[in-house]
Amino acid sequence: MGHFGRLVDSGKDLWRNPSLLGVLVLQYAIVTLLGILFGLMDIALIASLNGGTLGPLLDQGAPQEALIGAVWNAKTAIALGVVGGVQFLLLTAVASWFTAGAYGMIRNLLLDGSTALREFRPMARRFVWRIFRFTLLRYALLAVLTAPLVFSFLGIAGTTSGLVTPGQMAFFTIALIAFVVIGLFVMLLLLYGDAVIVFEDAGALRAAKRTLLLVRRHPWTSLVTGLLSIALLALFAIIISFLLAPLRAAKQAVVASEGLGIIGNVLLVAAGTVVVIFIFRTYRSITGGVVRTVSYRTRKKA
Image (cartoon, rainbow, N blue to C red; front, side, top):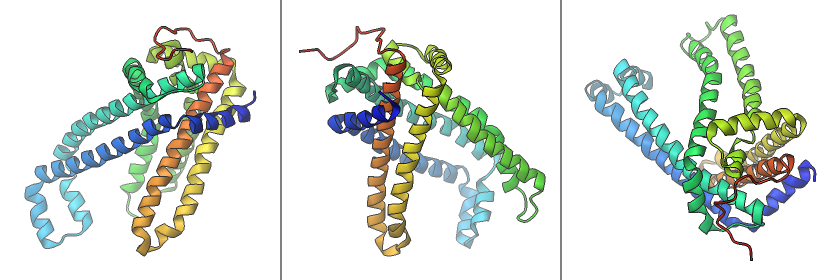
């Protein structure tokens, strides 16, 4: 079976197993709400740390630049760094719980032909911390890649408008290109990591090593799989943005626009789920469908 055949079958898998999409939509909703809650907490923290400075400025109707300058200090940066770090780990842990359960359900789907919501909890409990550590590994690599880009952007942002030097722009352009190219390369190298975790009962580091080996042995298949996955997500995002653009431009349709925006995000979650199933199917194809550990299967054959 070719790449497009696996992609089509992945779409069929999701269509026949809506509980899988329900889990990931719930993940999207909970993580979004937690993100909003954490954002409000951060605003309250900034206000409490800088109340004496912000109060007079707000009474005077000071411009936004003055308000930002009043709260941007070492004390606020350190406090937000610590609190933001804890919030990030909590969000990642919550997301990993749902991801681990969903990936375990996909595993059972590919083994048995279907999955059910009752399989979510045991799969989440078994794989959550492995998925959590593997996700942190991805984020760490992304942070290393992002550092030069952020550094160059801050250099440009801190320069007076119209005085940005050609050297600054060149450095930012090179950093952006490197981020995109190397980021895609890293994504490719870690392509099968989640599948390795749930199918081979592997830890995060072992999964990273295993997926590197699989990509090296099957470079063409892995490259096409990665590019098709990116193309599918990009296509969905473009189509959804195109459909919502007229409503977002009409101020009287704000409520409808936001409602359709939520629907658009759900469709993106569905596209992402199809991509994950597609990657897992490709992993099964290049490994011959061998399951190395089967003691924790939750489904029974009739």
